[in-house]
Length: 94
Image (cartoon, rainbow, N blue to C red; front, side, top):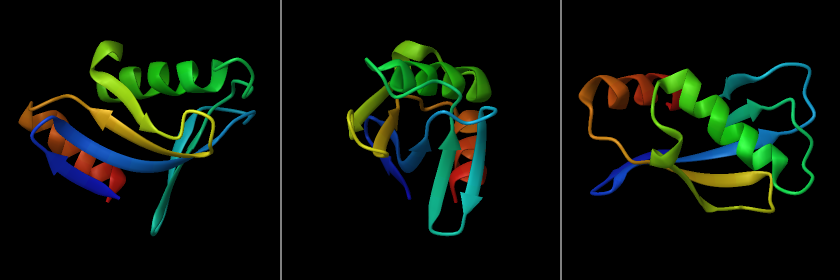
């Protein structure tokens, strides 16, 4: 699920677009991120990055979708070495 790399933290998630509210749900092996945006023209991906940015107080430019641009299963890179943020990511995604 969560892996530390020289570039930052890599996390595997499953996105659930068209949800009633934005939230992160940890379901054991899978972390689901519910997003209110529709999966049309990259709106859900953009909303996902905005939500993660606000939630973890990491700049949008430091969050990148490595894999899964058009899939529900995504690999996200958080480019941060801030120990507090890394700890928060660890607590949320593990």
